[in-house]
Amino acid sequence: MQFSFIAFFCALFRIVVALPMLPDSLSIRHTTDWMRSQVSEIWNFPNGTWVESLAVRGNGQILTTILSSSQVYQVDPSKKTPATLVHTFESFRGCLGIVELQPDIFYVVVGNVTSQVFPDTAGSFTVWELDMRKFVPGRAPATVTKKATFPQSVFLNGITTINPFSSSILLIADSGAGAVWSLDTSTGRIAKASSDPRLAPTNGTRPLGVNGVKVHQGTLFFTNFNQQIFASADIGPQGDLQSPAKILATELDGVDDFQLDVHGDAFFTGNDQLRYYRFGGNNVSVLSRDPLLEGSTAVQFGRRPSDSRSLYVSTFGPIEQYESGTRAGPGRIVRVDLTVSKGQRVVFR
Ligand SMILES: *[C@@H]1O[C@H](CO)[C@@H](O)[C@H](O)[C@H]1NC(C)=O
Ligand SMILES: *[C@@H]1O[C@H](CO)[C@@H](O)[C@H](O)[C@H]1NC(C)=O
Ligand SMILES: *[C@@H]1O[C@H](CO)[C@@H](O)[C@H](O)[C@H]1NC(C)=O
Ligand SMILES: *[C@@H]1O[C@H](CO)[C@@H](O)[C@H](O)[C@H]1NC(C)=O
Image (cartoon, rainbow, N blue to C red; front, side, top):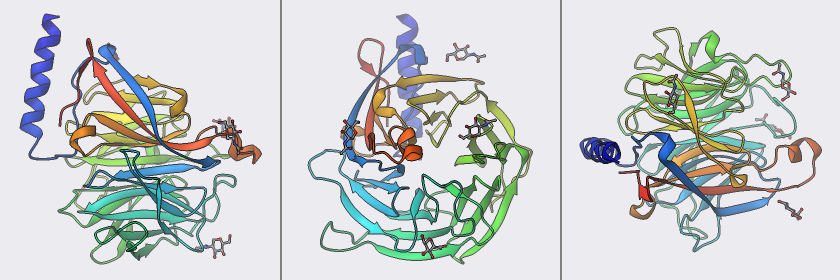
C-alpha cells in the first residue's frame, strides 16, 4: 500500500512536469500487475469492414481509415452521432496509416492493397493530405491533396511524424520492402530513409516486416510483424537510421501498430490484445485481452477531458472472414479505460 502511494505521487509529478510539452499524451507509471481494463464499443462498422488505423482530432473526434474500402470516417467518441464519411479516395482500394502533422491537418497512406490479396499492387501507394480545418459533417468537405506517390514502394503501412508541429518530415513504414521512407511535406521530396535487417519481412507468403513507426526524442521505434519484435534506432533529422536497430522486446505474436506516451512507454495492438512496454525495460505485458479487441490494428489516446484516461483502438474483427469472404463480424472502434489499485485511475494528462 505504501509503495502504491509513492508510485502514485511519482506518476502525478512526472506528468505535471511533462504536461506543457505534449498535452495529448498519457502516462502510466504503475506496475502493470495492478492494472485493470474496461473495454467498451464506441462504433461498429458493418461486418467485414477492416478498420486499419486512427487519429484523434484536437476536438476529440476520431478519424479512422478503412483498409477494406478506400475511405476515412469520423467517429464520435461520445456516441451521440453516427460515424460520418469524411472522404473516399476514388480509384484506390484501401487506406492505411494516418497521422496529424499540423493542427487538424492529417496525412493518410492510400494504396491498392486489399484484405484478401496480399500484397497487392506494389508501387500504387500514395500519401494524401487531409485538411480537416473547414470540415463540417454533411456540409463542408475536408480539403484533400495528393502529396506524393511512391512508385518504388512495396507495401506502405504505418506513418509518423518526426516532430509534430515543427518538422515537415513524415516517416512511412514499407512493410513489404523492409524499409522506412521519408516524405518532406513542404517540398514533396521522398527518399528511402532507412533499411536494416530488423525492418525486413521474413515470411514469403505474408511478407510484413516493419509495421508501426513512431519517433520519441530522436529515436525511431518500430514493430515488425513477421519478426514479432519491438525495436529502436537513432535517426537523423531526415529520418535516416544512424545506428543499427536494437531489439527491445521479442515474441510479440501478431503485433500491429502501437503508440508511445510522453515517456516512451508503448501500447501495442495485435490479436485480441492491448500490450504494454515500459520504457527502458525488456519485456511486454498484456494490459487487456477482450473479444472486442479481436483484430486490433492501431491505438491512440483520447484528447478530451472526459477521455484523457482512455485509449481508442481500431479493429478488423475475425481475421478468417477476410480469407473466406464471409462477413462474420464487425470492424470496430473500441475504448479501453485503464484503472489501477482499488479503482484509482492511473492515467494522467
Ligand atoms: C487500383 O486498382 C484499380 C482496379 O482495381 C485500378 O483501376 C487503379 O488504376 C489502381 N490504382 C493504382 C494507383 O494502381
Ligand atoms: C507465413 O504467413 C502465412 C500466412 O499468414 C502463415 O500461414 C505461415 O504460417 C507463416 N509462416 C511463417 C514461417 O511464419
Ligand atoms: C517483465 O515484466 C514484468 C511485469 O512488468 C516484470 O515483473 C518483470 O520483472 C519483467 N521481466 C524482465 C526480464 O524485465
Ligand atoms: C455479423 O456478424 C455477427 C457476428 O459477430 C453475426 O451474428 C451477424 O449475423 C453478422 N451479420 C451479417 C449481416 O452477416
